[in-house]
Length: 579
Image (cartoon, rainbow, N blue to C red; front, side, top):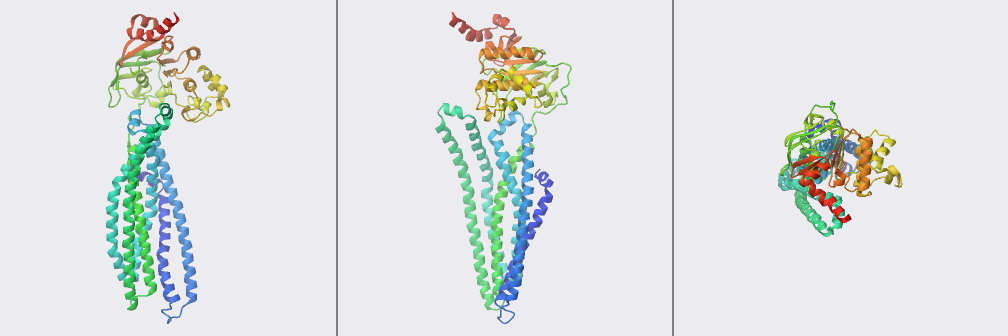
């Protein structure tokens, strides 16, 4: 699957490789020229000990030009490496985000927010670095290693054999260290998931942490997770800290052996001082190549571990599969639950055998004790979850048969938790209809009883909302969310306990305005208060995942014990107090 991304930018990678060949070739040529400068230019071995200054100048200038050309090749290599690596990372990150946007809520829950953030950021960066290092480093390392050995054999077989004896030992040390470090990289990324998850939870819930005076506990929890991360990171670093000096020691032993063999060979007239100097330079290049190979393998190991985590996202199929229905139906605004049952993955059954029909233009309220399944029931309408039994029909069509976008275009929701974005108030409302004009946005805000407080803000509708709406009160956030839902002008309008922070007068004004401006819209209101539900055409009462009664307020008050209990706990107590 990775090849799909590499293939798009293969020309950049090929150009990067070509320029790297040019850069390394210049590095391999220079020791030979330096050997000639020392032997012929300085020592004058071919001219009876008389140095040749012209040769030194000529070869020195040649070396400078080769260095400049090599530097140019290196710079261009970096340019094309970054072009390929950055573009591959960019495409991969976009594809991951697109895939995440198709995930169902259970899929999101299984991954976890912290893990998804880590995979989208750190893991893809590691993959990006792995590709860049592979394109740049493998060519350079391979050429330096084998090129240096070839050149040394050309200088002297004795020098070549010395390095060849050390080479297997270096490879063995590297293999052992990489085997020990390889499994730690996967563990390291998982621990980074944990750290990010704690960060995300604590930043989101900072008000709760401060209100409950749990800062010390959260510091300890974060510190423990971070300590585990650092412990694993240190184990990796210690492995490589051991490997680097061992490889260095082996290579310096090779240098010492070359000096010893070279001394004997020069004394016997079998080689020249310049050749010894060139051999040492090639050995140093070989050492640099091996050390670079260590870093490359480190990045490759971490990159492969990260790629496996990214691939899980890219290869995950959406659990909710689109149907063929494009949303065109004869009936507008009807909802029907046919023997619907539902259980969350790995959890107990929340809804059982729900039979309920909501007619177009009708207002239905859902009431019941906390945890009875009200929010779950309305979440099945836009197909946030698939039922585990029965069927949900919108406009007479099973929701599974719709394209998800077509289905959700029919529905506007103001959720239990008001989600706002770091943008202006106007932009937050316009999410309901991005093409709406200012007058339409203000009209929706007036219906939601939000125009008054928005107009009093310093910049009015252009006032920037803080992250997650932290600059607004709970009631203000709810009214902006309601305005967003109203602006959508959908067939079905769902309020999932979205007026809980509003006072009774504001809530009553909101429903009065809705009846006037949206008389034909089907409305479902999840409510905790009798005052929020009593004006609905019908009220469905849920108890332990079942609908125990459904009818107008007066009818339920006369016949439904569960509704009577709710009424008595709210309105009845108020009446007693008034008496």
